[in-house]
Image (cartoon, rainbow, N blue to C red):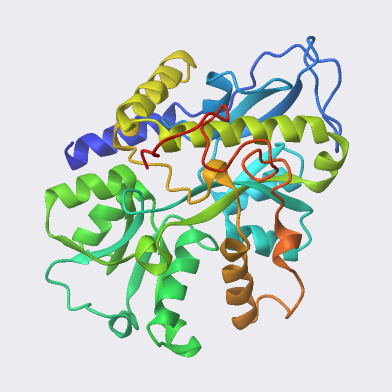
Length: 362
């Protein structure tokens, strides 16, 4: 796909992602911890999607894995911190973000609890931090005084860049001299090639097409930092969990099974299902982007969260003076209690219905 074609595609996707309220028969208004309920008794969960992509709750609904909940798409949002804010302020029931952003939101008073891992990195799916082939930047110290482009600040990319710089031995003052610039993903490659930034953050279709065009090399990737690792989680408001436990449990079990389905199903079948979902949901989207899907990138079976995936960022925030020592424990941030691959419902090595799996595809 050419750069201009990619820009046209993503621009069209963004233009088609206008906010929309689905028609749902309800018996109650959603205020505070109350939830709307359909005529047949399903709890309605408002959420934000991603343009021209399928998120795992949507996959779960399409696979028929929910019994007690129904999803209501209210629009698209690719900003993790904003997703958390919208969840905390009752604009949606659940949101997702990088774990460091989740912790910062909780430390700032947002009453949220993570319930599922939903994205991460592995050898097939990762975010790369790229420079031009002829760039003099070869190591972390070369970034002092340079510009790094990323989609948003205060989330995954900022944390990962700062973590890499720290691992490479830069001091806090030296790290502060690396300038982080917000650049939309669709513009990152062009900004890098034109010298507007020195390092560009590229993932998924943007990485694939940029690398195909040549002239770039990775400085590092998020996968090289920690290996296969879950970086982000889905979270609910605490009051919503307390007052709608059955709905949250159904959401988690269904989404966990959908993640597991994607983890063990051949890639071409997953892509075909994504294309089917996009074609039938009526949002005027193009299915080209899902063809670049490689893997879930989620380390735990069915999105099970581990202490390490949280503790790393608790320690990071504490070291950087953004979190008081002992203010939060990993167990304060998340729960696996609803996940069937953790609570004993299914064996962690089993498939989406608890069936034995000889060998996972991913």
